Length: 224
Ligand SMILES: CC(C)(COP(=O)(O)OP(=O)(O)OC[C@H]1O[C@@H](n2cnc3c(N)ncnc32)[C@H](O)[C@@H]1OP(=O)(O)O)[C@@H](O)C(=O)NCCC(=O)NCCS
Image 1: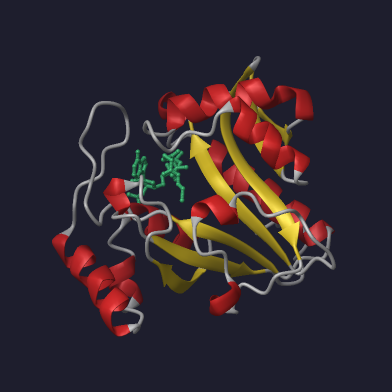
Image 2: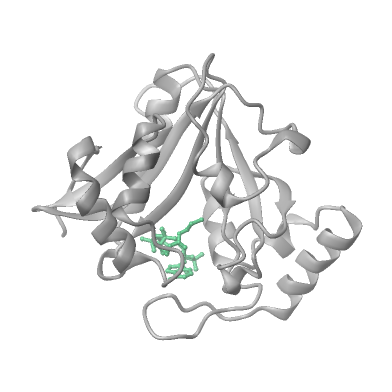
């Protein structure tokens, strides 16, 4: 069993987060140390899973007064989504760049990181945790490195139909994608499709599916 601890990242630990980003994300989707510093200056934070001196998993987030259900006002792309300043009064926690280093995937660190983000959101009174759901089954990725997802033609057609018609596909189609299935298991709702959100994510066709988890009153012993 892997022994790691989960905690908030300190501002001087931006280099360790940049190292994790370069291990966990394909080229073109990794945040540099300077980008991470810029985001921290905007009031962003990160929860990290630490094994020895290495970060093995992380999620970045910030608190905002924005209402994620107001689609017209939602950040149009990842650049805006990940560089908005934190704002008050807090209504939502916006989360991005959830990742686990390849060798530690499937070992539970991601759940602990997600639980810590949710706990933090609750503690500041946020009603929603919101993120940009990657959907790599749209085009699939088979390049070098750990980022391998098969293209799923049915899923791809469902996303294209959603894009064309504006009508959200049924959940059974959306959760054909492994990452959307992951968010669904966490109790998230899918809010809207964001085309050209991150064009460099070719596996996802540049799309993101914006998701939201409503935070209910915490039951004893649970952070979900
Ligand atoms: C997504 C991620 C954080 C999940 O962490 P994990 O420790 O693998 O979590 P789990 O073991 O619970 O796996 C969750 C799902 O992700 C899928 N998955 C794992 N690695 C994957 C990868 N490289 N690409 C796509 N999907 C992957 C799994 O198939 C699993 O789905 P399933 O069990 O329904 O088939 C991790 O795989 C990762 O860092 N991926 C690269 C970065 C990324 O895509 N982040 C998501 C941003 S929305």
